[in-house]
Length: 255
Image 1 (spheres, rainbow, N blue to C red):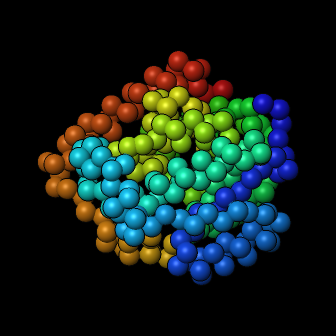
Image 2: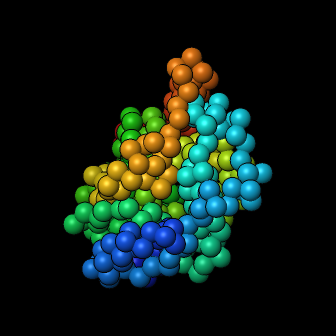
């Protein structure tokens, strides 16, 4: 893929209809940067529970995540996959996907331009994280480190995805057996290059009120430790799976 610019970029903002204050904050930030976007009405996992239930493997989710699946996690998962369907039909070769609780840093446009210029080096690229363990530098895009991760790399508030990758992932992401960012962390299964651009140029600030996990995580119900043993075994195995995929694809050693 040749170098890209912002002219090659589509932007989708995921926002629940009722979250008007979040939309206003995002619009203010995006307008200040001169970035046009398409708003995607986020899928409410609770309101559409009957429709989405057949697409969720609740038993597998409990085993893989060590907790029961919540309506918020279902809605988040369904929203990102539905946006990918739109990206797949768009004319732009790459999309910036945003959740509505993002705070952009002063250098965000610099990092975005660097990422687009180096688009040949990645398939999906995150500008934020919840956690990013065991980074392996793949090189530099401008002044930013392009990192792969052997450990967990989660958080989907701000990321780039190529159109062809979005189409392929959208077709193969159901049924839901994990949280969305955890499923993306199985890049070894879906076979795509998931990297991060550090230092990260955005972060999340939801004010302690998440549409996914509730107020102060009150919608998260983790099982007792002994019921989480399958989850812990899976986490350990995934370190090896990620390392093996990175090794086979020439991404395991620092460059």
